[in-house]
Image 1 (tube, helix red, strand yellow):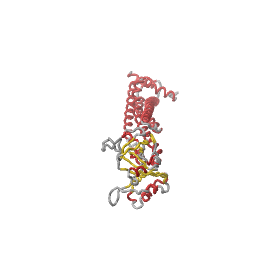
Image 2 (cartoon, helix red, strand yellow):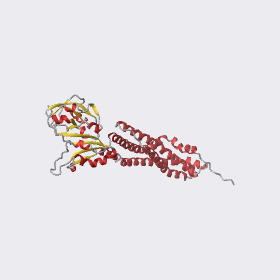
Image 3 (tube, helix red, strand yellow):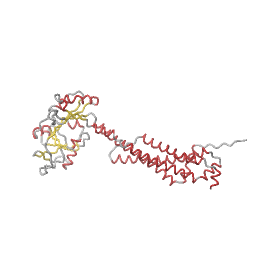
Image 4 (cartoon, one colour):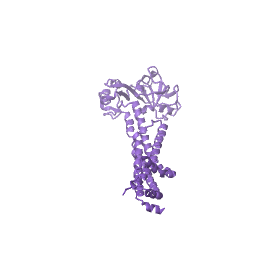
Length: 397
């Protein structure tokens, strides 16, 4: 007696029968896929925005360098007052092997005003300092407008403003004058932002020679900025206190201005896990929506299932049909979510002036997650459909 063998479904046939239910109910497909898309878009956008922010910080660190140290006086062990660095501290620091650039800054006790009619208490939080000519190069800064202090203008009543100080004084162009210590100084330049020297952004800088001749500056630096080779940063840091102040190295403090940016870059994804959790919840809700859609689809298509079973389709083929349908549904949502998440990241990065970065692993992982959810969500409806008796299904309709 001849036995009947079920026909084998080719991949093209599986895709055709699996998509039949989706083609017949487009609105339901859109709404079900939307839940998946929102979850994936949230996760992609969270990872992309975090990666874009971190990339911007890393590029800024690469540009500014992580090889700069700042030397400042600490508290005196005997008097408890602020100690002083020797006048030749910058020159001594320059002798350390590996040090490439050194610049000194000396704080001055004078407030600076827009003119002589401004209230003396209205200082705008602007500090005044004497600056060495090498400061701009050491900081890797640049001028937004005008020129930097040099041998010519650094001996006369001229001043360079940090970009925050210039904004607070309402000065937008060089050539204007500011009032300090009973006389007017001419603004010769305005600095561009200095992310690793924010104290200078809020400062007015005069030449070292002019500070000594016109403002009774004693010549003791209050900050020394130095850059060394990347390989010698740690060694230079250890040598600086004993070099710049051999008599009292304990009164010298060393700071790394890049540490804040490095910490910020390291913590750029601090809230990523929390936001990814929210995205995962949205994705789970989308998966539940897919499962619900598939269960309803099985109930509505009992006649179709019964007819296919009566015509020879095996339970395995019925299961495969509905799992395929679930995978297609979640796959469409996942693809839309990846595109939406990448687009959201692009909009955020572009509006914030950041590089657009979406890690490939995030897109691949997100799409893979949708397929996994689609498989899980479709298993129960597929098993239920396969267990449907063709006689009962046809009789029920």
